Length: 426
Ligand code: ATP
Ligand code: MG
Image 1: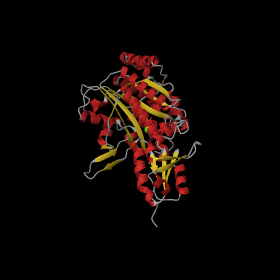
Image 2 (image 1 turned 180 degrees about the vertical axis):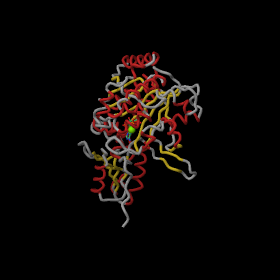
Image 3 (image 1 turned 30 degrees about the horizontal axis):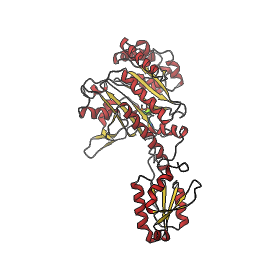
Image 4 (image 1 turned 90 degrees about the vertical axis):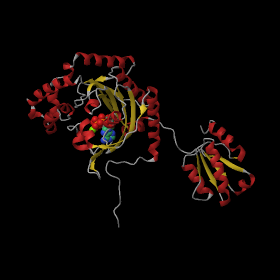
């Protein structure tokens, strides 16, 4: 007996009953991106491992322990993308989209991270990401936050809160880092093991620590806000004023710090209390240094990535969804002689834009009606040998109480259209 083959841990099947929500989400994403003039870019799932080492950074969780990396047949190290920004910048430079230009781009698709699977955290997950190049802000910073807020509204999602902070310039952060390292080194005994290590590899990440003793030490640590340069202060104030003007609520979170050198100024997360520990549905910020780090010259940039599965979980809690994709009409046919006519009529109905499921695999009348009921259609059509001889079909309502009627083939399209537009099946 052979062992049962199962999916890989953290790699999920997304079944048809869920895909209606996915479709609803991506329709909204498309509409909102269009509304702000962002254009979709499609990027490869595999890139050279070096790209992520250089852009995401060696001292991050992602590169340290979460990447799916392989040696390919040419003995090169390649990785399944853990995020989309690196590939987007690579593609922008390679295709000459960035130098002296403005670009508003978005992408979506699967990302891969080898982390411990739990609710809202998977090894293959999906992101919708956005990147805006060539604009220093603060106007575009406000724009992309307004875009997020519009998306939540369009999806019918409440309780998503904006947390925002400014990281200043890289120079500000060098000063902050030095001050932080000095402060923490003097209190190193009270830090957890991860934080001790990070103190020397990536000290700003200590600010993310969930350890109680470390958190206590951090309470009195130097604050980045106190070290901000004047221009960054002005930039941040303008972003907040823009949010106020557009009535977008926010909370300033001084501990919201991304630990990479190329991040600068605006940084933000959208979070919810409805998803337990995995409450961040979107994270992003300004990364003015990255394009140059990857060889593309000085190009200011800002972007975000949202976790699709987490948004879907929220939609499951909060959104009433009418059945989107199911057939409107189930077509029963009885007796071998009727198939050709039934298939032709079904094609005519589809030509007219109706969603039609034509019975297949035989079955007695009762079995076919059961399928009709199960598939969610509002109307069943029945073509038996008698109807074939008379050029008609029976039209039977599966939901409302309308009486069964007999309709001539020539009247079928307008008859069904009227019926589907009517109050009962609408
Ligand atoms: P977290 O702190 O939850 O690990 P992160 O900082 O690693 O998040 P980002 O790299 O900023 O996340 O990715 C943006 C978004 O993608 C996150 O806010 C989250 O919604 C989603 N996301 C990240 N990792 C996963 C995952 N393993 N499974 C599902 N969604 C994820
Ligand atoms: Mg993570």
